Image 1: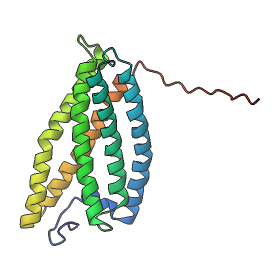
Image 2 (image 1 turned 120 degrees about the vertical axis):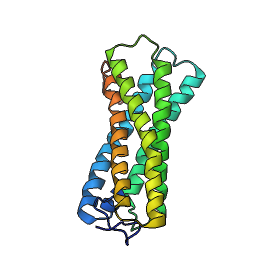
Image 3 (image 1 turned 60 degrees about the horizontal axis):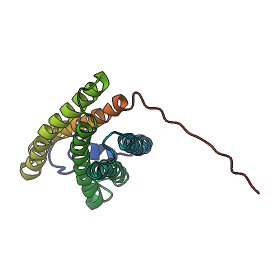
Image 4 (image 1 turned 90 degrees about the vertical axis):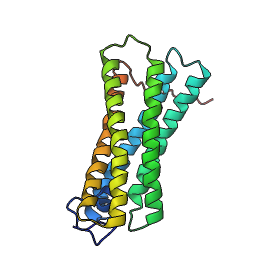
Length: 206
């Protein structure tokens, strides 16, 4: 297997961008991401309203922060959809731009979400809140530690075209995506005591 970025360097593990450009894996990826993105955008609004109902929600700075977290989560998903439907081979500029946008919004979302959580959940925390915080914190710490490593190996691959260096970058990429997904599982504990109610009101015609 060769790198999609530098086809002269042999590698054993394809990156996500490489898989997206292959017909069958790319189609499966797009279907999965499209379904998941709808759920994530819905989750962003659910979390926004859940945080807006907190005891400090009336403070202006908290309301702005809550809106920023919601925006970053939605922008992250839209960036993921864009990079999924425009592969590196189809449109390099759009794909790379969307990839950078996805990483930036994901990191910003995680940082702001952690701060929002601490401000909206005064201690002492219950078991669900403690579990949610640990998931958020460790996912963010490991991601921030791994991100510069992945950038290093990507640049090294571009400059020196060494064998299997791009595979190391690909592994970092997979782990970072898993960390982002793990971070978002904290919402299960945040919403463990919440209920979503769908109402229907029949309109009367005069």
